[in-house]
Every structure is written in C-alpha cells, then in structure tokens.
Length: 320
Ligand SMILES: [Zn+2]
Image (cartoon, rainbow, N blue to C red; front, side, top):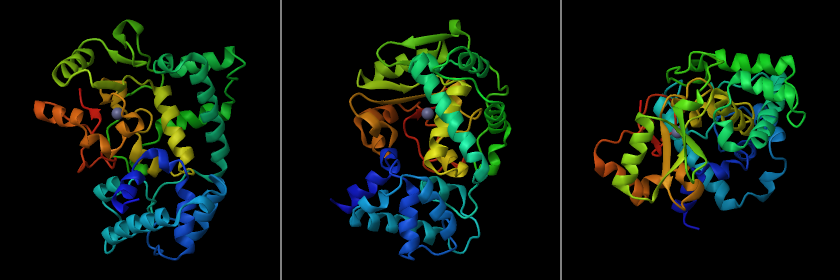
C-alpha cells in the first residue's frame, strides 16, 4: 500500500475504531514518542488495557510506521510551544495531547452504561426518531421500556454534568447553541427527508438542501440532519468511549452536547454511494464537493483552518 493512501486511511474514523490507545502504547514502547507529547506511559497503558485488547498484535508494521510518522509530524509542530494551538489540534485530531482532558477514572463505568443505555434506546425507537428524542423523552422511554431500562440517578447526574460542563475545558471553542438541557424539537417544525433516514427543519434548512440538490445533482445526499440533545449525547459518548475517556479528543471530532449546530439547522451532505468516506477528508476530493464549492455561496462550518479546535469537516454545511 502506498504510504500516501495509508496516511489518508488514518483519517477515516473507521480505522480509529481499532483503538488509538493500542497504537499509542506501541509508540510508547518503541520510545519514538517524546514524553512532551501524547499520553504518558502509564496513561497510555491504562488506555490500551481499557480499549480493544490485543489489537496491537494485528497492527501491520507499515501502518504502525505511518502512524509514527503522523505523530512525529505533530510533535515537531508542537515543539517549542508549551501548548499546541487549536489548528494543530484540529489537524491531528486523533492524536493525544499532554493537556487533553480525561474523564475521571471512577466515572468511566457510568459513562459506559449511560452510553449503552442510549444505544439501546436508539435501536428501540429507530435511528430517525432518535434524532428527535429530548432529554425528558429519554427518561420516559427508559422508565417505560425494560428493553432500555431506567436511568440510575448517577447516570442522569453524569449526563447533566456533561451538558453543563463548559466545553472550553476540553479545548472546544464553539458556542453553546442549545441553552436548555430539556429543549425539545416540535414535530411540526420538522420534515423527514425521504430515502435518507434523516430530518431537517422546515423552512431555511429544507429549502437550502433542495436548492443544493438541484444545483449539484441527485448525487448529493443528506447524511445527517437534525440531532436532538440526546442524539448528540449518544454520538459524543460513543467517541469519548472510543477515546478511552479523552473528552478533548472526542470534542475534536464531535461537538459536545449542546454545542452542535445540527440542533439548530446545519446539516451534513455526502456523495451517494461514498459510504463512511463521506465523513473523511476524501469527501473534499469528490465531484459533489467541487460542485458545491463552485456554487460560490456554500459555507463549510469547520474549515481546515478553523479556530474551534475541531477537525476539518468538508461535509458540514453551515445554514445558520
Ligand atoms: Zn455535521
């Protein structure tokens, strides 16, 4: 495999599910990662143990070497500055930085069980409907259906704390767009977009989506629309779980609950048939993206040089 292709593959979130903890442990073991960057050895080992046991054994050597190169590039970028700047963090969003914010270890089991409960809820109500589930709805569903199971108080406290935490502590610099934990999305303001399983707000968002489809062609498809507080919690916790409790790393790929513009009108688009690569840098290479750019009026929320501390998201259309 070409090194270039390999490096590109690293930016695809699917790979990262292998567990960056194991990768980092490898890097720690080979002592190619200076102490000033990334997890400390103890932290790395803790993460590796907690994440995807044994995956390091099946990491191909060239993949590991390519990763080392990626991390070393990041190290060079951060040398001389005590803290990496927002753009460096955005670019190396899957790396672990010294001052990343980790969830306290004793809260990890609570986070995991809350995430699993939300996951069961999503299966129970269906992916489309889950996008509209408010915090109060979630409590009600959990209480009424044994398939989901009632939230213990500690999980509710955890989710509340997650919402009320100022995301600046993670290094996320976006604005809080949902000002109420219990905000709900009225059904009559929402439309289901046929064939996508996603929803959009009637009016500005829906009109803009149809305008884009008309201009770009039927190759353009909605890949994520409205997301309620609970949907965003589920997505964010999935990433936080995958990141071994590294909330900063999670927030470089996903807005923390309350901070997602998906709750107020932004949406994601992709190219039909492009699958998960619609959520990678590869989307920016597609004809769909190029045609979007040629229109001249389409704004991308998280550009490659954004100061939000968020990765480049060429698929995320700014509506609001
Ligand atoms: Zn998005």
